[in-house]
Length: 240
Ligand code: ATP
Image (cartoon, rainbow, N blue to C red; front, side):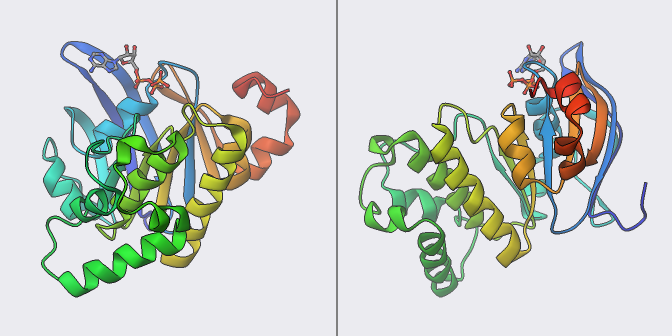
């Protein structure tokens, strides 16, 4: 493992109660990278994100920029610059788009900068500017995912954890969303961990990818290499 990794995951074990889900996972993420975590249903992808953001009990090494991530203290992990966009989005349906975005900045006191950041989110997602006064619950699935990502950006994260943003979205909408994630990654230098079952599209946007199966990393590599190797793509990801 490189000494200069931005995120280090080493021999990570995690689970729920007595049940173990992750059995000694290890990988590094470089700063500014889009890192895909792929794998079938139940492989442990969501559990990995919950472990990273301090929601569940873990054993092993988790370091961000050389500093150990706090265990079982999601607020402290968030303060270190880690934003989590959970599966199912977690937007507040009755609140407006603008109110949802402001919630992402609830710990911040710099009101002028918060207002600027809301404008920046609208620049990434122009449709949200149009819908800023509308209840989040009345938006399309893709727009709700934009609100969830926009809200995460409001904390000015260094690392953003996206859990299956493509869930329930049409392929074209997913592609548009991934293009915006890449624009954020390039312009803000935000490191991204993108958990997905949609391997084909994800490999187009990610720099590196790790494939999980039953709580273990079974394949790691450059996304382009995995995509280019038809045998590997078929064997590990079912891509024909
Ligand atoms: P999916 O794409 O279906 O979400 P995944 O790769 O994200 O799959 P996880 O959600 O991490 O997989 O689930 C891994 C295992 O952990 C599964 O066997 C699941 O039943 C179990 N699990 C997930 N959440 C809980 C929980 N809150 N309590 C107990 N077991 C859980």
